[in-house]
Image (cartoon, rainbow, N blue to C red; front, side, top):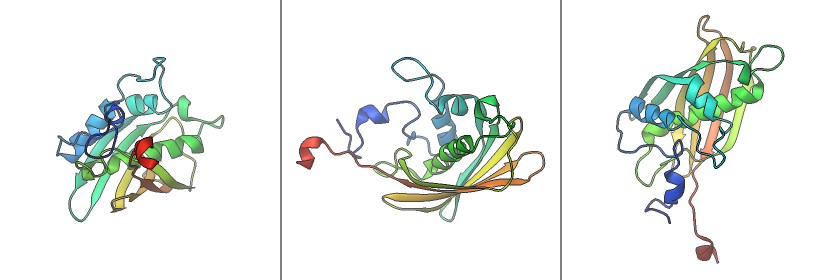
Amino acid sequence: MADGSGYPSDLLSVPGVAFDLKISDPAERIRAYIRGYVSPVSADGQDAMDDKLMRDQITLVSANSCKEKTMAVFLVKGGSNLSNRLGNLHGGAISLIYDMCTTMCAAPLAREGFWEFGGVSQNLSVTFLRPAKANRELLVECQVLKIGKRLVTIRGEMRDKITGTLLSVAEHTKATVSFVSSKAAL
């Protein structure tokens, strides 16, 4: 059964899926989303691919949202679960980090019937500039470039926390989805 937004209530009730619209403070809304990953929700009780990252390795540093700009900065603690055999973060892991961080950056803009959860990736483009060492702390700075009824585009930059060196940049376009029952489609 869907609520008035078109999203099925069973999907929106899964921790780590929907943004808590009752929370107006941008930083607190993102922190609440991260807390949704505290325990596994899969049927077999195992972590999903993003659970450990969200639960143990990403924290919010700051977030703000006003008419002109919505931004969020995240601290990411690298680890062997994200690394390749060279001791660097794997490109796929970096893409996952951007996927999660850019999605959360859009959370402050959500409201009832509008981007109630992060949607689905349409395009995620990452440009790798320098290796990101797996044992380092990283800062991921994200900014919503444009949000509309169906699409949002968010930019991200990953830097080494200690040196400030720019390691990679990303642009992520997400689409919101409207769930329609199969009967309505006929």
